[in-house]
Image (cartoon, rainbow, N blue to C red; front, side, top):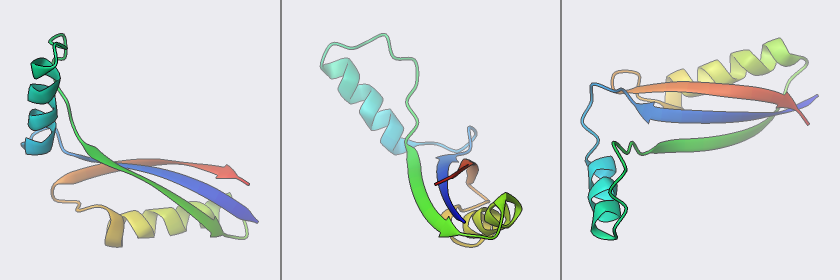
Length: 83
């Protein structure tokens, strides 16, 4: 079976996000000043083959923990759907 895994990786709230701060400042400069905070992250889409959703989940976890997220500075979450 084929699965689609959509992964969001974000810096932890306690970690400074200079890219997010720069975007917030840019938004203020163009007149959008109602923004309270901006955080920049990564959105990753994997299409993978697995025998079932449990195996797809295991592959997604391994991908996130070993490569896609820096667990010291980032959190991740994902959704899996059959394609």
